[in-house]
Image 1 (cartoon, rainbow, N blue to C red):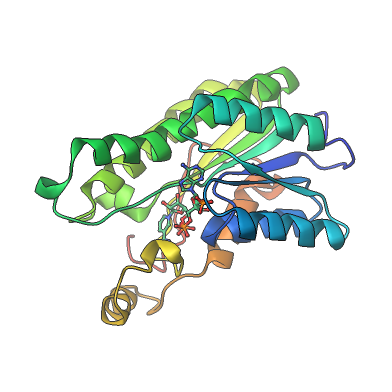
Image 2: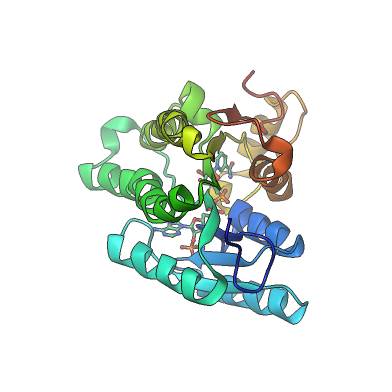
Length: 251
Ligand code: NAP
């Protein structure tokens, strides 16, 4: 594998790296010596600040704005990654949006936007990353699904549908590119304490924690460590799998 420009480790690109699980994941890879591309869309400040902090501490990181649902943005992001840190050898498809409400109250635009970010974004990033990985006969993709993609959630039908699509994409792509030395896996977290759940009341969050056998919400760092494991050589015989840091909520 041709590594990052200045590092012996492959370049990692984390979509939605500005907040929550993506931010924790980008920090973990960077702290472990991986040249790290922190993608953001709207939250420029935390992404740029994190890249600055990583570089000041002797690591290698850039923050790149791209709306993952836009083909031109994704192409420009991969160009920036290649020029500044080297071709992307590890892709973490983490960016997503969620919404709550009765299915009958949702609009078609909301359906299309949720699929555009959560599924089209993943498609576009995989398409952009794979030519290099196929050429090198090496690479790793980790896609973020959700336990709601496995079992479905009332009042989150759109989100659940996109996260089920992520599992299908992961399993099929893993079979297709496995012979080319590329691993594709999926992480399906339970309820994690991030901004994605900030609309929930303290009572709702307490109830979700009580429904979790480990009796608490998960942290971004716990999910980041699962993602890191799947991208590491410790997971060298794991592909096409759905790994569930969910505290036992779905077993
Ligand atoms: P979060 O705190 O809401 O952060 C979402 C991230 O996605 C942000 O960095 C945001 O970037 C980015 N993003 C949104 N739209 C984007 C777009 N069009 N282009 C590029 N980036 C975009 O979410 P999270 O809780 O960390 O979730 C991360 C992943 O884990 C998601 O795939 C989510 O579905 C999954 N997950 C989360 C939970 C949970 O309980 N939190 C549970 C299961 C699965 P900007 O702010 O820069 O726009």
